[in-house]
Length: 294
Image (cartoon, rainbow, N blue to C red; front, side, top):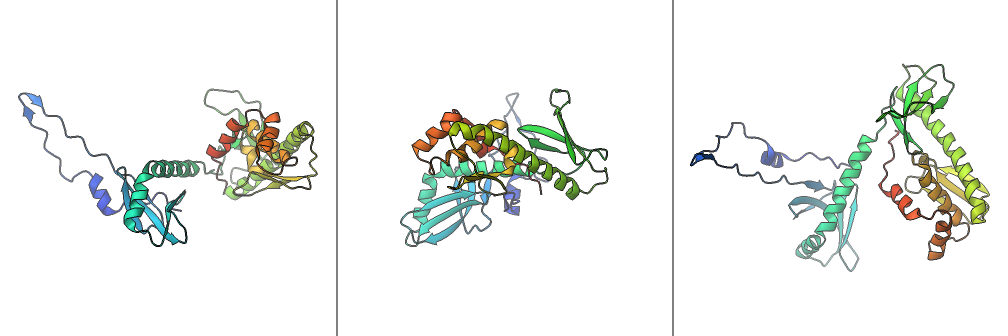
């Protein structure tokens, strides 16, 4: 993935200041002539496998074109960029027309993907004393403390403006390697996830009149949870980064599948019976960015 491709020399030439200073604008009748406003910079979105290029709304979009056995032109915007699938018989002129017709949607999605990638980059954890990780929607400061056994959460901190109140005392010396800190903290997070999930399952299962026969932690990349007809459910341990209402929604969602194994209106009625505002909470899972632990 390369969303931060540097502009080519020709593009840089459009934006770089000239080597020599420009002369000041001449006064006209004693009034300094206004400077001519510079043209807005051109934003570039480039797919790493791009083989075509188009200008949409003043933005250069380099996209990957794939010919496929299909009846219409399709667009997919991923973290890599824009991919266009088109029937073999459709010409480039028709493809460009379709791109211009969808330019608003394409540019919005490309901008969202770039912003998300930048937030993910900023979310990378620097495993050291004083690093921070999200836990139950709050920020936790890591404190390397060789006196601690394992990892111990301290919740007695004063809630000062802009300062996290939670500290996690990690039983390692200041000379600990980043991998040691990561492994110890990740193990603690997983233990907390199991404890919290078990508590929330015990809370919601009787209210939904279902029985969870088995609870497992998952490390899936694309799924927050799953349920099986035998009564077992799997929950992604990374949910522990989110606030409790978000965890409750996923737990209730999977338990509701033990009554309705689809996403029909009846299923959502079951979810709503225990999480009335589930739509608002569900959005947090779509826009939230998980910390990068590796």
